[in-house]
Image 1 (spheres, rainbow, N blue to C red):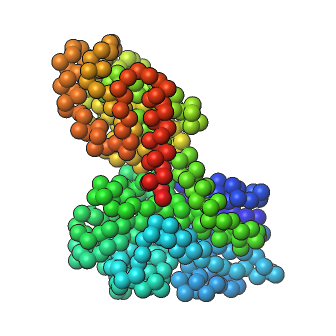
Image 2: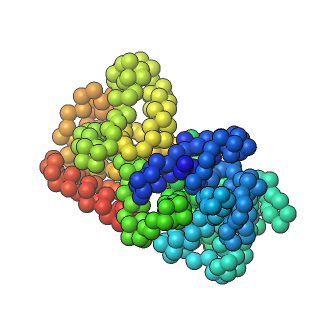
Length: 419
């Protein structure tokens, strides 16, 4: 039996990754009792995640040098009647930091959390000659500090999040620390990979910092585990190619822009091109309210409409592999955009005012006349630009040209963002 052992695994991508590189079935094994697990299961090779990376050690016969030093195990194999424990997270972390050119030597490091993953990161940083490693935690141990002491370490250049705070399904949990209080910060690495961008990484991007999630680390530790389990060697070229494909598959393409800019039409076309599920937020609102958008505005008011819109966005933003068309006012609530950014690439359809004025504003409650179009454009344009990962300049109604522009911009985003 091969698989992942943990307590709650709804967030995990491990099954997808292992079955991509092997022909062996890989199970997600949830248990609340290690005793029960070892009584009922015959292990060939398993990975181990929260909360068992340390708790599993007494059940094992031997540990690799890294696992012994770190006191954490995330891979177990059965050999000659013995259970052997390894730490492949170390390998995954090393390969990820190399890929993103993040060097810990002579740097001041903050690690958020004091669990097993924190120990792996701390071990890596010390082994690679970090200047100082500071552990911040909600319940600090000896030689650690409370999270509220972050302001005492303003020389910090790299922050690692080694906690599950902000992980699916609790995506909306806020960042543990205020990154803007660390003036020398250059990089933030969050071991969370679901969502693709945690709130901590979104905050890092807003500060123009290098922001790296845990997906590549997950893939590389899986690759090292596969070598242990099956003696299969996977090249870096294969790993990085798969990393880009998996990251894009898991991400949503989120279309924003003025009413009548063609978001719904273009997101529908894009969903077919990239084999993503199409979601129209306005349509979902009409299904929920059992009424038209225009009538909902008129009978219930804009505040009610925006509340329903936010609830629906909160639901769909946690899902993967969608093309989402948003209403024009989605950007008025920053929480909406933070939620959408977590698993989404935000695409702004930038249609000039001259073209918008030529469109028929039927069934658009906020666009009863052309002066309203001008007012909304003036009020919202800056917000659209500020939230966009990609801007598509729609200067005509040439469908093929616009779709080509979307494709080129997505490819460029992927090649620069994930390389």
